[in-house]
Image (cartoon, rainbow, N blue to C red; front, side, top):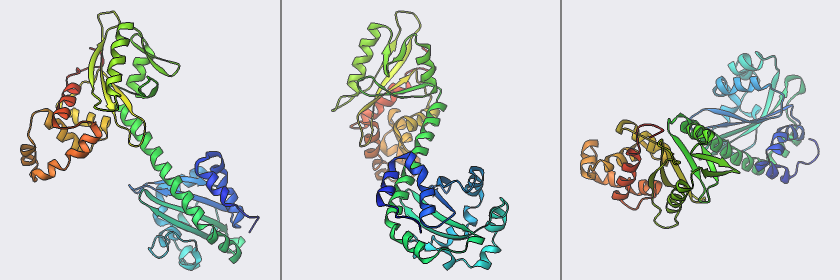
Amino acid sequence: MSSVLSAEAFYDAILDDDWFAHLPRMMASHYGARSCNMVWQLPDGAHQIVGQCGHFLPEHMALYAEGFTDKDLWAQRALTPDRVNRAHNCEEFVSADEYENSAFYNEWIRAIGDDTYYCAGMMVQTGWGTGLIGFHKGRSQGGFDQESLDGFSRDVLHIRKLLAVRGRLTVEQIARRTSAEMLDAVAQGVIALNPDGTLVSANAAAEAVLSEGSLLAVRCGRLEVVDPNDALRLSGAIAMAARPRNPSGSTLTLRGGGREGLQVTVLPLAVEGGPRRVTLLLGLGARSDTLARQLRTLFGLTAAEADLAVRLSEGVSPHDIAQARGVNVSTVRSQFKPLYAKMQCSGQLQVASLVQRIRSTGAGLWS
């Protein structure tokens, strides 16, 4: 085992991407390994390569993530309840004969021209997925000595925390990327703003409007309304939506002194544990069959919550909704609280009013 790897090295790598990129190589050297790989299994079963020291090529690791995680005997055997969250010399539960006859060894390791034969590793289980870290040596190098294994065991707590946080960041990055892709798929423009007008995000349709610049534009990171009269009205609508108490939405048409106009719906945007923000919907028009999907995108509703919001906006009573779904009315009412919280409404009437405003904004981007 090489020189001491300090606890600070692990904790610095939690949020420092550059340091984290170097850490697998440092750990491999420290524990006498040739390679170090970190993989995160997402709740849906997909696998993401979190970090590696560079021994395996990126295309080899992509092949592993796509087709060999379930054939990795070392990882699968480490997932048992008595082994998870602990450091292991994988020779303890995968024999040499079993490994040599496995599809993992013959169809991946040998197929890519590698001779990886020994592994020490750990599985970390969390509420947002499972992390895997593996240290490997080639066949000619021999197995891990006790000093290296003892060092690995001493650092287990640090490695567990590192993997757990990095796994959470990976899940959140994928979620943000997925959300952005969902918003870009929406035909109408969606803009998120801070109350002071600074731009947080804009989907592809909104970017097209901002780039055109005849009514709305972004300058120095802030949303700018070209026409002074439009600017005054939109500023007031944003202020109403950003109020700390009883925020409210509204719809207005920006005309810029011309005949053609852009309809904008201004809505409060709930950010759990974060600052208050405002959403602008540019000319959002949604029929009943698409409105529920729009609500799910805008407010993070479940399918049942979005359906409930649409039905309330149509004047359907909770009793009739329950009857149509074939459930007890108490089941429907249990969805009110999370629905109100996500849409920042205080009751059924506010939900219905907000959905009706979104529904009535028009059928196209430009009105």
